[in-house]
Length: 439
Image 1 (cartoon, rainbow, N blue to C red):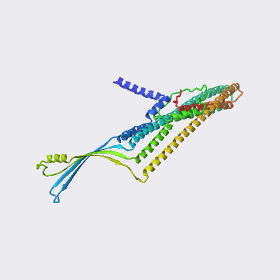
Image 2: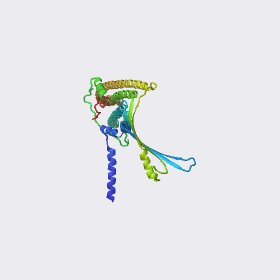
Image 3: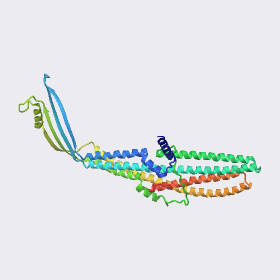
Image 4: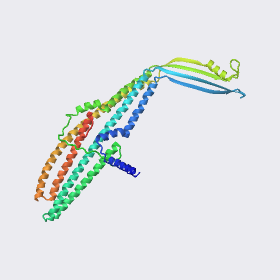
């Protein structure tokens, strides 16, 4: 029994430890969000509900069948006798012609399902892009932490060497205070970077809707050996996006639905033809049946048999004058189509503007990265020279810290420029239809 308890405890601890150590990849984050995001689930349920409208629309092509029954009681003027009577019936009707309205409604309903699916696809793509942005932001903050720790290590070594020089009587104690102040600043920078990482991980966890406790992402070393723009201009990206983006497809499908709306409105100007059938019978109480027998059951059956009848007919309806209501509805449907056509033009314009802005952002981020890289190389050379001068005593600790601080800021600027360029490049891939991958 004790062994069983120990085994269970070890198993639970191993599960908790394994969960705490899990590091999410970008693809895992995206897959989990697309599977479990509440907004996406609601969108999918809306699509599922709209599919039931197909059944409703198709039902209009089938006959309507209904049954009726009524029970009545009557008395004579002295209220001595109560006479029951009832009637039953079955009726059916079938629309033979309605100007094609029912078939148009079925097609419009199918288009509505596609519109819901396109809305879901748009939501999925936007969530994927947001996750990639937050994921890269978390990687950026992780790299900042490494850099901050590196600065603390360098300053600590510098502090130890300065202490040795002070103990040997070579340097004044004031130099030690300067380095201690620098070390305190470095630790503050580390704390700021750690807080930024915690916040970025919280944002990512909330975006994919998982508990933020122990949430972490897999470390990815992003090296830009050769940073270049894949695309020569934004035109190629826009042409591809205009064919594939769900927002554009939705706007185009809206126009098709508007055209169906015009056709549906025009069916009100056409006649409707229906086929009708009915079966009816009735019964009224009598003390004796038709044959002089006082048999209530026989009387009941005979009456229903003798009183039953069938009806079959075709009815046609055509509106001669309706105060121009139908004509007004047709005109409204035409105007609605023109509005939706403008929506398509507006959607394409917004897409072009977004892609053009994204392309300019990517170009600017590339230039910023190249400038930051050149600046870092210059600061590294300056730092090497300052190190040699500091070792030889030709530079005091205050001036040396200034050079080191500039080097640190250059590294931060390069990291920022690198991740900014990576994300801007991924945005262009996103609109070109290439899945975002970080590796």
